[in-house]
Image 1 (tube, rainbow, N blue to C red):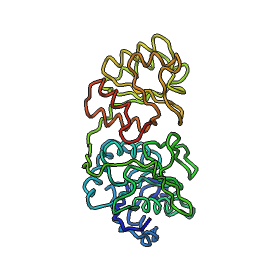
Image 2 (image 1 turned 60 degrees about the vertical axis):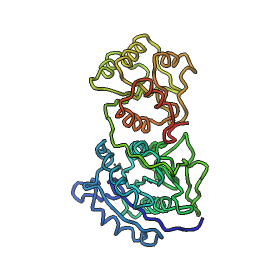
Image 3 (image 1 turned 135 degrees about the vertical axis):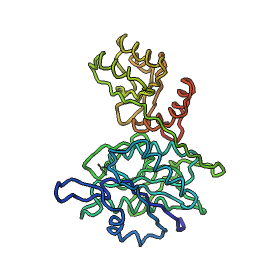
Image 4 (image 1 turned 120 degrees about the vertical axis):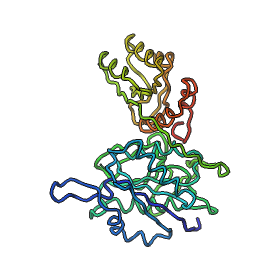
Length: 343
Ligand code: ASP
């Protein structure tokens, strides 16, 4: 592939990558973005033109909320025409959630938005931050015939680029912190950077990018477990203002079959709350009707999350709830892949 120079915008939102140890308390805190850059002189060796910007107050990703998602989308939207690609530095803890919801907020994306971060701060001798950052910039900068090769939201960590809305953080210690069990990597970094082009989303350049900036967070994740009790579940499902529930079920979408349980779900759906069936397993798919233990869920109108991750289901729910769709349209759209998030 012939090298073409790209304009890349590097956006720092916070996270370990740019943190230092507070000498008094010993805890990790975000520090100045310019200091972060002075720790990576290698950036100057890259062929691309790199500009940087930062959240006014960088945050630990555990503090992310829908307003931060909208702020991030606005930074990209305001710079969309000027840049060929975007690299978002983000805490790894909730990176899959943010990157997933951002993938829904951009329709007809024709440029890469690559999320990355690190397990060790960039100033640490053994840091994983430099490789993650430098390769992310290279991936965001790849072009063919003057157009970015990657035209979707990706997540790069420890030698692999994944479709962001397929990822889950699976390890809090290993450098290999993310997995995408239901979709193969988009690119792998070894001696050469290998892009698996057949896995990339194909965009239509004639369509204009549409930015969706309304989200709803009236959502609950309910992870069921054997022995879950009726009164607890009644309280949870009865919460006022609740509009969507991600029901994390067993295996291929199975739950208990007790009448009280099914009736409670049915009443909740009749109240206008959308319930999505997502498996607790980190790989595989929901198949309602495969076992008797999921047949009833299908009958009462529970929506199949198929092989979506919980993180992507939350993002898709936040995005779709804000559209105020009727129950049937919501179900049909949720069960359709919008950004490659499900098979
Ligand atoms: N707690 C940090 C965060 O998610 C962890 C990290 O950056 O990896 O912001």
